[in-house]
Amino acid sequence: MLGLSGILMFVLALSIYYRLNLIYVIAFLIVALGLTATSRLHYKAHTWLELFLGFFIGFLPQLIVLNYWL
Image (tube, rainbow, N blue to C red):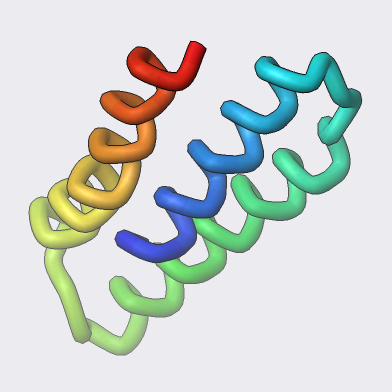
């Protein structure tokens, strides 16, 4: 979750900064995040809280860098 959410935010930042239409890549990454979270829950490897924390820990640094970049 941490890695995929970081990649998702990075692709979103690239899409915003360069004004590119990366909607298919963004949609694929969102689906990949959903599948990853579902599989981690199904195999009881993580709890909901751990998944949310992993998502936000990967997402927030990219969001902070985005504020300095743009």
